[in-house]
Amino acid sequence: QEQLSDRINRLETSATLAMAAKARELKAEGKNIIGLSLGEPDFNTPDFIKDAAIQAINDNYNSYTPVDGYVDLKEAVIHKFKRDNRLTYDKSQIVVSTGAKQSLANVAMVCINPGDEVILPCPYWVSYKDIVKIAEGVPVEVPTTIDTDFKMTPQQLEAAITPKTKMLWYSSPCNPSGMLYSKEELRALADVLKKHPQIIVVSDEIYEHINFVGDHVSMAEFDDMYDRTVTVNGVSKAFAMTGWRIGYIGAPSYIARACTKIQGQFTSGANCIAQRATIAALEAPVSKISFMIDTFKERRKLILDLLSDVPGFKCNAPQGAFYVFPDVSELFGKSYNGTTINNATDLSMYLLEEAEVATVTGAAFGDPNCLRLSYAASEADIKQAIKQIKAALS
Ligand code: PLP
Image (cartoon, rainbow, N blue to C red; front, side):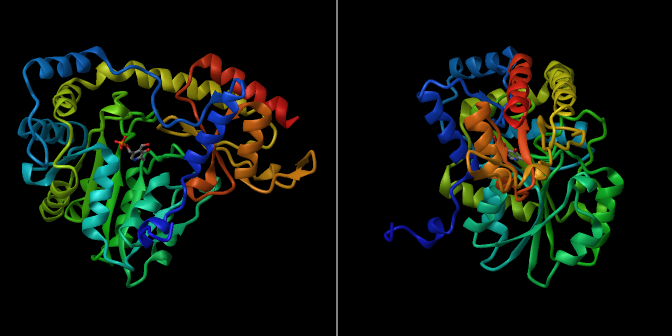
C-alpha cells in the first residue's frame, strides 16, 4: 500500500462498487437480489447501430483512428449539436473519447491545477468528485434538497465562489436526481458566472434524450457562456451503448486541443468500430430511440405510484434520466435487531439484506438523506422490488 501514489490513496472506494460487491456476495449465497442500482438501460443496442459496427469490421476498420475521432464522426457530432442543441461547433472543437467518463477526465486533467476549486452542486454524479481529486482539484459541494428539486440556486452558487474557483460541473438531466435546469434557471446561474469570468463550466448532457418534460437546454446556448462551457455528451444512455464506450465534447478549441493532447498520451483515441457505430447512432432521427424513452416514462410513473405508498420515502417527480431519488431521512433513527439506521447508507444496506433489493446510497452522490433507485429495470422487477421494500420497512 505504501508503494502506491498519494494520488490513488486519496481516492475513496466507490460506494456504488461496494454495493455491487455486497449484492454479488448475497447472490452467491443464493439470495435473489433485485437490482435497482444500475445506471444503464436494460435494452439491447438497436440493430441499425449493431449493423453499422458489423459493416465496419467487414470493411476492415482496424487501424488507429485520429486521436480526437474520425473526421466523419466529428461531422456527425457537429450535426447532432446543431440539430438537437442549437450549438455551432467546428471540427477543432470536438473530441471523441472512450466514454463521457474519459471526456470528463480529460477536461479535469487539462483545466485543473492543484488546489483549484471545482463547484459540484449536490447531488452530483458519483465520479465527478474523484475525477476532480485525481486532477488535484478541490471539490466544493453545494448541498441542495428535495424542496428545491435538488437544484442549486444562483445565491448558493454565488456563495460558493472564491478566488480559487476554477470550474462548475453539473449534469442536466441529473444523475441521480433526474431533475433538469430550465432555461431561466440556467440563465440565472450564468448571470452569477458573468461576474467571475475565470470559471469554466462543464455541462454534462448525457441524459439529454431521456427527458419527459420536453425542453433540454445547454449552457453553451447562451452567447456569453459559449466560450467558457464544455458540453459533454455520449451514446451510452440514449442509445443503450454503455459498453461501446463513446463520449464526446464540444468545447472552446484551446480546451479541445488540450484534451486531444492528453488523450494522445493515454489512449490514442476511442475504439474504431464503436466510432463507426456511433456515426449511425447520431445520424439517425431521434424517433428511432423514442420507444426506449417512452418505456422509461411508463416505468417512472409506475415506480412513483408504488413509492407514494411506501412510508418514509419522500419523492419528487424526476423530469429525466431513469432514476428516482427519494429523501428517506424520516426513517433515520429506526432500529432493527439492535442496529440503528442512521443514514441512507445504513438504509441501503438494510434494504439489500432484508428486502433483497439493491439501491445506491445518496451519500455516493453527496446527499446522505436520499437513496437512488434506477428504473432501468423490468416492470415486474420494479413491482416486486417495491413490494419487498415496503414489507421490509413495515
Ligand atoms: N455522466 C453521467 C451523469 C453519467 O451518469 C454517466 C454514466 O453513468 C457518465 C457521465 C459516463 O458515461 P459513459 O458511459 O459515456 O462514460
